[in-house]
Length: 144
Image 1 (tube, rainbow, N blue to C red):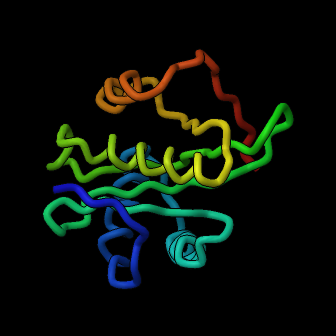
Image 2 (image 1 turned 30 degrees about the horizontal axis):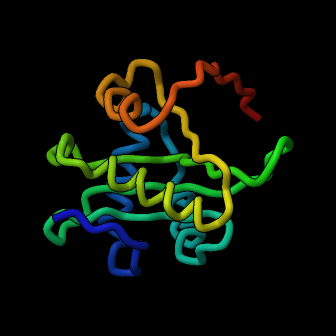
């Protein structure tokens, strides 16, 4: 059975292992202090938020998200990170995490939840195409 909740202090190691796997998946390298900064922010649960998924008691999925202002209406929720352990993919973990973020955002008065994924992430996109609408936007960024 899948259960969703906030990460607890005892989840720290399992959360970091999944977050590191997420960072590795996107072929990024982050300094160790980034993990500590993020963990502290998720524990404070004020600006940045996290949920974890457990399957039969084992932490198998994470999501990180935050609310931001919207120039054309009420606030929106950006789902920044979503990752599940490879051995549980296809068992509904990511779907449950997305649903939990959506419920949370609705409770906060947000009018939308949105996220990005790489175009090559076919596995995730199969799920995303079932639970959300691809509006066709292309992302640009400038590294600072």
